[in-house]
Image 1 (spheres, helix red, strand yellow):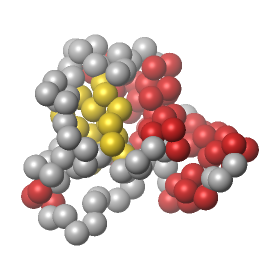
Image 2 (cartoon, rainbow, N blue to C red; image 1 turned 120 degrees about the vertical axis):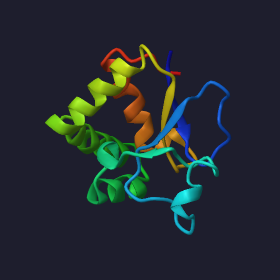
Image 3 (tube, rainbow, N blue to C red; image 1 turned 60 degrees about the vertical axis):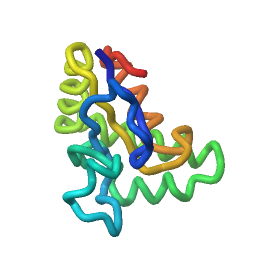
Length: 128
């Protein structure tokens, strides 16, 4: 069993399981009834998305130093009790269920999901 880190809106892997959207906002122009059928997500879970302020830092990060500052701020947000509990839950579920978490960003290396991958791995999640 594993958790996959995916780009929302991409084709699903046959064994992907439930797709969780760790984004601040739902996809624009898509009816809620079509989120799953269009491969966006099955469940919206903004608890693991960066806050709007932090998201803006990431979007504007055009140097390694700025990207590192974004990562530090996002990690601090994920250290709060609610986010930390959510990460622990997902790590535990990865031992018994297939599911995925994701974001819209094209490049995982310049997206909060790159940090989310590491945070889940640090908690013992089986991550692909």
